[in-house]
Image (tube, rainbow, N blue to C red):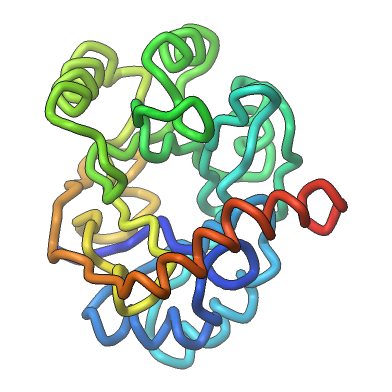
Length: 233
């Protein structure tokens, strides 16, 4: 089995590491593949792919896309041939990901927040319109036992429309949190997702210094929204 962390951020959005630092952390963690999924930008993809190739690491071109107001739910695209426009409906965002040659993935669902994370009713309405290619069933964001059971039951009831079960660390801190959650796969990663033979799993516990977390939260909650409002993403 090979291992991927297909949900990683760099300092091109609200991550705290440069592409080289992300690649170094992935190699150090023994990963075979990562996906660069910065919020609303693919600016770091090419550099990360170049540095990954030099290190023998596969790098998937991705993006974590902010959908329309007010919920601004996140969707991920993997294997994109270019950026996906932000601010669209969930269904239109899935269609745009597919138009870019990508796979549409639901990240960190059912979190107890209004912003960013898709909720059960929203997800049901989405998959009634269009299927997605995968959904994170294991991730690092806090969920709680009740919500986790609801997610597992939801997937069991609708797996034909939800695609592959996947896992990712939502890495923002390089070696501190990369590979804490991974997706196991055999052979080609995209083919494994399309065949739904992937295995999400927890691999280690992340431990990020509080001072680093505080700086990242400033980037995420203040700097990134300002850049979005200014049209810099």
